[in-house]
Each structure stands twice: as C-alpha cells, then as structure tokens.
Length: 418
Ligand code: ASP
Ligand code: MG
Image (cartoon, rainbow, N blue to C red):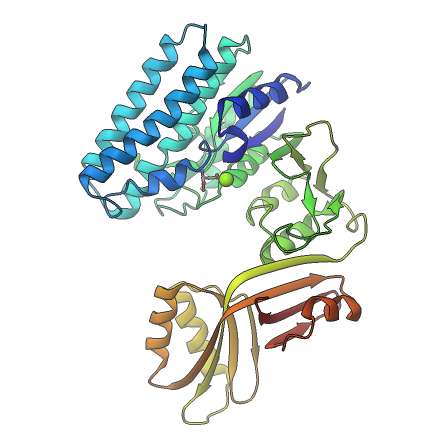
C-alpha cells in the first residue's frame, strides 16, 4: 500500500480536485490511502469563527462565506451527476459546524479542535463523493478513530500503542482506495484533537508507519525539495535525493517543505518519502530516504524571517554560568519560546527567537529585575549547509553580522533583513 498526502493548495478549487482525482487514478498500487487537508485557507477561516475571534453577526457572515466556498466547489464537481448523497452529508456537517460555533461549550483549546476539524471533515466528504461519482469507489475513513492522541488539545501527542491497535484491521485488510483527513485525531475522552498547524504531513507519516506503507508521497505546488526558498533566492536547485537525517536537520533549521515531525516515523521503518508536484506529476520530484548524502551536492539555504536577537546579562555581573543558564532555559520553556540559535560569553547570553510580541513582552518582564536585556528586531536567521566563505560573503553582502555560528557543515548568521 502507498500513502498520498494532498495539502490545502492542491484541493482549493473544483479544477484542483479534478487534477487530484487524475493523480489518484494513475496510481498503480493495489491499495492507496489518501490523506487530505482542508481546502485552501479553510483552517484560517475556521479559526476566525472561534468565539474569541468574532461576535455573532460576524460568525454568521463568515460561516456563510465558508458555506458558499465549499458548496460552489461541490456543485461544480457534481454537475450533471446525482449530488443528493453529497449534499445531504454537507448539510449535516454545516449544521454541526453552526451548532459548534454558536454554542461553544468548553475550554478554548477543546473548542478550537472541535471547530477547526470541520475543514478536513468537509474536504474529504466532498472528495470522497466526487471520486465515487467518477467511478472511483473508495472508503471514507474518520481518522479520529485511527490516529489516537492524548488530550493535549491543539498539539496532541500520538498514543502509538492505541494508534497501532486502532489501525490493525486496516493493516491486515487495506482498502483498495481510502480517503481520510490530515491534521485531526481523536482522544480517549471522545474529543477531537489536532496535531498542530500544518500537521497533515505528520498524519500521513503516522498512517504510513502504522500501515507499513511502501512509500509516502506529498503532492505540492513546488517541483520537489528545493535548496532554497524561492521567496528569498532566485536561482533554486531541486534536490533529487535527501537522507532522512538531513531532512530532519533542515526541518529543524526552519525549512518549511516538510513538517519537522514527519520524517521520524518514516525513518524508523525505512519508508521512502517522495515530494512531487501536483502541477507536473510526471516529474521525478524529490526523495527522502536512506541515502548517504544529498544529491546533487549543493549548498542549502534556510531563511528564518522576523527574528529577534536578545542579549541577556546578569545585573550583578556574575558570570553566565550553569545556574543562570538553568534559570534562563527554564523560563524560555515555561513561556513556550523556542530558541532558534544561541551563544554565550562570560557576561552575556544571546538568543535568537521568532518575533511574537506577546511572548517577547512576557519574557522581558520576567527578566527585567535580575538582568540587563537588549534586543534587536527585524532580523533574518540564515542557515547555510555546505557553505564556503565565498557563499557566506555573497549572502551577507556587506551587512553587519550580529551573531555567527559555524560548525563543519553548517553556518548560521543573524543579519538585518535586506
Ligand atoms: N489544514 C491544516 C492547516 O492548515 C493542516 C494542514 O494543512 O496540514 O494547518
Ligand atoms: Mg497546508
């Protein structure tokens, strides 16, 4: 069996869904599991329906827009066909969504998961019916019965024992074609959970692991894994082969092509991951697998925008030693600030973090009594794997370097955004 994952951009219109169906039709495996995200920017639109984001008249208006968006796609896909079963399911889902948003009953995070999960439930419902109407019989699976997590809403931790047990029958008897949701999962207390924003890749990897898939393919709007983000670099090169560990490192440094948690379950079972373009599906794309090095060999660039560099020095001029560091790391973990790169000297400790005004303010307030704190915003953290000095000079292009860290293969620099 093989697993395909389609993200929001690959199902954001009727034309996109038709294109997806064609890719599914051409799959030659005896068994295919398709994991799908919400259509287009639906998850953002659902976040805007949360009780904390709108009043009731805004809620109705936004719900109507979401309704119209999906029904338009559904109607375009079923033109001339019997759309009754699909419309019945859609009406039921939108009635449930109306109810869930009108009467939020519980804590914010529980409501969040309950409400945003409709994006994937709706997209897979439309797609499953459409495929059936096109002669592609398929099984719609509620992934909340398959991927099981704890009750840590908005960022559920997978309960692997439960998930392996829940996928047992599917593992023994895989459906020729199954359609299911990315991003969402189920907890033992019966509530819906989610795996964190952009979590659908991870869903596909969990299912690939549990179902012993031969391979997993992520269909994207880029030709594969590029050596740099085209947003910042004009001459990008597609990487044909990437070792698992390299992919994990790149995700850690901030490469956005693959969700950081995705690679590990695949690596554990040696399942190859293909990244291919849904626009040019015949092209080879990129493969992540048990390779020795990247191919072709080329420098890789990862830009983390909107960084803040904070420099922290004890007011009593005590050295930055273990006790200070223990306290500082504890504080960062408590507030939930991820350190992207750090450096310490005798008298100060510098960290680069993503700019989040609320968290930054909390951090500064907690530090102000015992530490002098200075910070610089509007920065880029640029990571270069397989650097040369000429490449670094070119990237820096005369800007002052605010922090630099170099290992054998990786150079990280913090500079002002151009
Ligand atoms: N629909 C979810 C999101 O937009 C999950 C995903 O697309 O991966 O975050
Ligand atoms: Mg997405």
